[in-house]
Image (cartoon, rainbow, N blue to C red; front, top):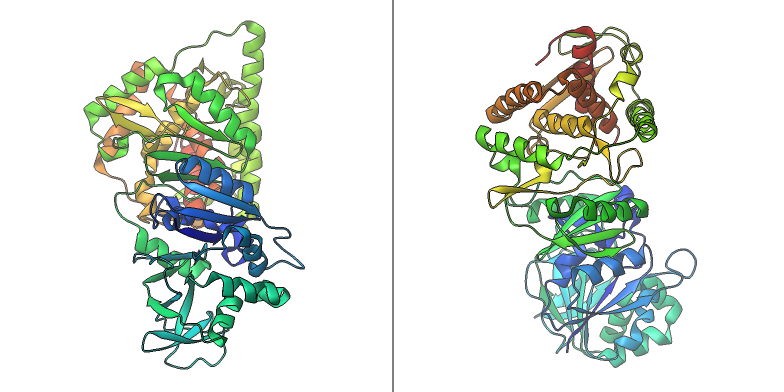
Length: 526
């Protein structure tokens, strides 16, 4: 039975903010962690020896949820950072499980080709143009004749060592690693491999098509290579991720309360959402539901059917007088207080200021502070308590068997698990009609923010424009307050702007300002 060693203990500093909340082996490529792409290169009966350190519990939890039928042997590495730490320490921590022929696969190395068995000693290499960032190897007639440190003797005939190796003579490898453990800790697996070469042990060179995911520029290259049009449109966020592994959807969030609330809410939403099959402190999983998202198959008749279906979902919840007072107060905090906090965060993140008479797409807009001051917050916070979703837009709606399944429901509404404001769901739906995720991921928008002038353009499909008009008619027919829906939609854009990347964040903020201005100043913009 083949054993594969994957070391995940390091902090992944070269990936900067991507590893603030995640181990580098869990960074996403094509809607799956890098680690998934590695694991799935090997047969089902492969045994994986995983060294854990930085965010190690997340690595363990993910593997146990994603691959319950795979065999994993976990080893904790201490220390995994600072004095005394190193790749070699991670490897030595696993040695008792690797006293047999094994494959070493760096947790930031992906290859296109099949990985050979460790029936002989071999090193993986790739012919890279720029070798200064990598260890290199020399090859003669298919045999490795030397393994060299980074930026040393970069001869033209050298090739990059890619952190992938088959070690058949494991006893010689471990003898070298254990004999000079201090040097081995600093150098990693290359120390043992060099010792084998110095002892005239035969090591073959194996050529691979290599994708290095350990630094930001090469990670982007790998992401583009693995991307395809059939993948879901997921906007990347620093504190959460959604992964698709086999027939599972796995949701990660850095906030444990977020996860536990999501799990509780799934039980309350019952048949409208997928049934959760596995839970860990920072993630949960459910069986993938087959079917297109609503935005991909949208028609006016289907949208009308969806709205009627949603009315059944938004089951009214009766609150007594005291609970309604509390609910309205929480709505006010959710709409007003959170808005002011998020706006200030946006100004800080993007070094912007609230300017009077700012020109946005040709419309003169007063200071945001002035517009927010004119809102009747008590009227806005007089919510309509219902069973709610909380992030109700087309990308979170699947069409299945002439019905609908709701995904990615909000963890709470102003602290409430069981009850939320219907108007928030309505506004979330409108915000998704105005800004479609698919358009954003394709960069079909532009925004230019220069002192007191903002110009933006956003591509919108004809069907979304028609559905927006239909939505307004439906709101009026259903006796809902369209002004309240639009104002809350404007607040949503203002709230989420600080959470997204530049320049998309600027577009969201400008949209929020114009939509709010339309309702406060009665100046139409769309």
